[in-house]
Length: 98
Figure 1 (cartoon, rainbow, N blue to C red):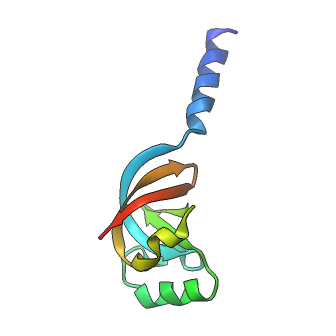
Figure 2: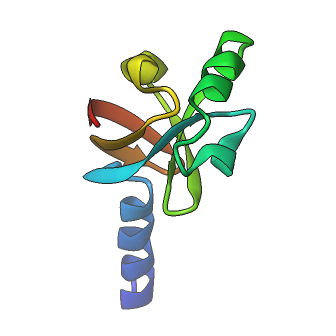
């Protein structure tokens, strides 16, 4: 295997690896997405979740899915700091703090 192929294989491995970290953002819903990124839509987010939308995490202009949505149910519409693992566009939440 040449050097280019080895480098490409290593890059592909890291692209599919979950990264642990801490991010600040807002818990929103899959219907409204980044619309409530400023933390002003608490009642709207709660209503959309009751109607079947999923909780999402909005950070740095990106809307991320939450693998374990129940972990954020007490923070719908709030600005929070999440600690967890990011895998592609999905975060698995380990802890949430206001």
